[in-house]
Image 1: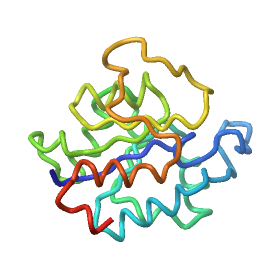
Image 2 (image 1 turned 90 degrees about the vertical axis):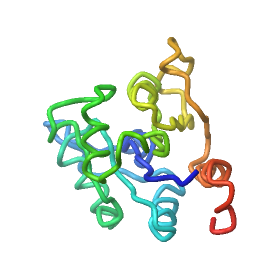
Image 3 (image 1 turned 60 degrees about the vertical axis):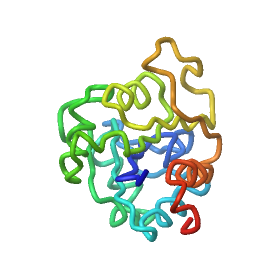
Image 4 (image 1 turned 180 degrees about the horizontal axis):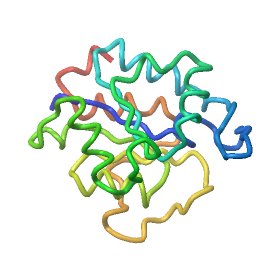
Length: 177
C-alpha cells in the first residue's frame, strides 16, 4: 500500500488547546504546539507525502497558530470549517480535501486522518473509508467509542507513533522512514 495523503486536525492534534489565548470573537491569537507535531509534519513533507489540515476552527486561529511556527507552507490543502461552512464529521469537509489533492475515490482507503475527537475526526474518516488514527494524548473529549463509526483503525498517544503506522501500512517502503 502507498499512502496517498495524511490529514491532520488542528486542536489537540497539532495545537495544544490548553495553551490557547483567544480574543473576544474566540479566535486563537496564540497557542503552543504539541511536542513533535511540527517535526512530524515536516518529516512527512520531506518524504513526499501530501499533507492537509482538516479542521473545525476559526479562520484566524489556524493562520495565527500555524503562521507563528512557519507551518502553513507544509500543507497542500486547508479544509477549514469556517471557510467551507461545514464541520466534521460531515463528509463534505473531507471530500473538499480529497478533491483538492486529486485523490480518487478508489484511493480513499490509502489516506490517513489523524485527530483527537472520536465523534468528529474518527467517525468522519471512517464514513469515507479513510484510515482513522485517533491521537489520544489527553482525555478532554470522550475516550470510548459510542458507535462502530467511532472505532479508530489505530490509536496513538505520541504523534511520533504515526511514522510506525505508516511503516506498517506501506510495508515495502519501510526503509525510507
